[in-house]
Image (cartoon, rainbow, N blue to C red; front, side, top):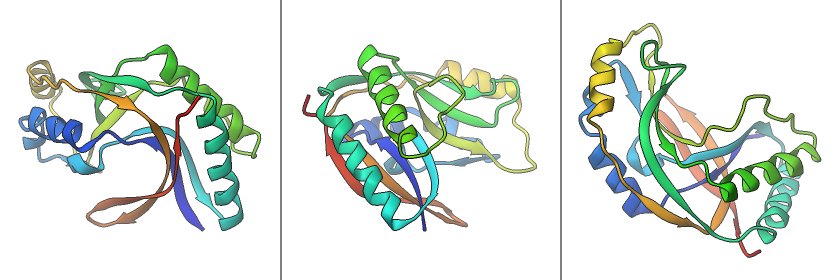
Length: 185
């Protein structure tokens, strides 16, 4: 069994801009920050999956990708879930383009056909930057001030979706690509 999710990985140049642009935010010690080289857009979290299902998922990704063309992803402003005053997750938004929404919807359909439950929450494209450490609180006004002055720009051509393995360690999750499907539609 492996812990899997489907993602879009920004190129290194965009990840470097994210790291540089969020440097002030990363000074908040009550948040466990995601290293810039691990930042990604999760399209679908799958959880623990066996080897046979992993092959079926990889095949479904190829089928979906064959029906979609490459498109541009654009970074927007940072924010927090559930909100800035009581944050649990700090994120950097991505523009909700019709192409991104269609790709995510196609993946949701294809994976539902394999027995994975559909996500009930609306798709909110974001790159997770950090999570508030268990038992810690963030001063919402300090976070709001930092978020307001954080400027990150970045756009890239999305050319593939990837099946990622997440290996949880005390120092944070480590990710590796298990399968990649190029958008060729």
